[in-house]
Image (tube, rainbow, N blue to C red; front, side):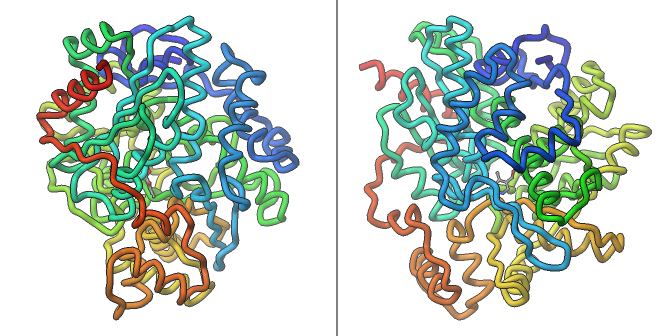
Length: 494
Ligand SMILES: *Cc1c(COP(=O)(O)O)cnc(C)c1O
């Protein structure tokens, strides 16, 4: 592993344990393991846990396949009978890679089912005795997936901060009803960016670090700033390609495009990393909702965060500062850590930075950006259901609409795999308003109506929510996140 800025390189287990470099920079892989076309295509012959292990293990040479494979088997046995990443044809050359068949019904499960085991194995490898204190800022789905992954895991404690009023009702209830003595949830009276800034501030705060260390704990992150989140996500892009070759949808060696509904730029960066490992990639379509800072960046090279966050039907993408873009720029600039530090410094000081020349040209050759509003996304849900009986959630609908726009503008009709990132029943209200405009009721009544209308059962994790006791009631202002964390640690020490 290397550090994006200039700080010293650390091992992969150390990068996972720390989450973020002491000075706030992000770790990036030191090199990308190379997979031959044969290595990739042969993944179709084995189950998902083994596929994931083959992809992840070379990044963690210090742990090895003997450690990683059993962790993957444990993590991916918690998915439903569809498996972790099935690819389905949905018409017009479009495919949906469904990443929402895990315990919390969003793609975050693909990484967060595995991260607790990776952390524990990394701690053991390094002889680290401290409890891992895992901090999470969530735009909705990471929080529940982290709570579910870490609940009851020895040697860990997990604290999730979510923006009050910034998540769907199902997302909120999924979090505040999570059982487990080592997991905690705090509502922040602000938006996701405020919560993410607060977590980064806590990481950089020496006095909190000391307090945490004196309690026998070490801070880490379960956000996609942690490489332990990103590396497991690479696996499903290679897996999808292998499945597409096996089904005859693409020829071995033919380029395949991917379309990814994007917020923090983690999922689409994993696709880019897969390409660097040898995956034949055509274009990467970066789909945003009305928070369109990435779309503007791809078209102009200016990343301008000086804009108001808008609440949309796809709250997990309501983000203005997409942390993982830093890692793409690191690669595109030829690993010029100094240049990246300059961009990040400019972002902190002026709320913007600007790339140009070869770096921008390089990004534009691969990435195509589009921004999709709520009305267009709802229209897309209705169209996909009408045309192919496919029911996307609002995030997936943003991607599918962006893909439609991409095809119209470029004339590219080659196969494209869109990441389907959440179950539609996590966002019953928005999905129902697309399909059943006259329906009325709370989110759960709307899910029941949707289920009646489509014949798709409401997932049991959602159906159980209205009856589940609320366990977590803490809330704070963005500037009170440090205090909220200390309260939790003091209570846990009693
Ligand atoms: C987190 C999330 C996204 C955005 O993924 P990033 O890795 O943050 O770009 C998209 N859709 C859903 C449903 C999510 O939970």
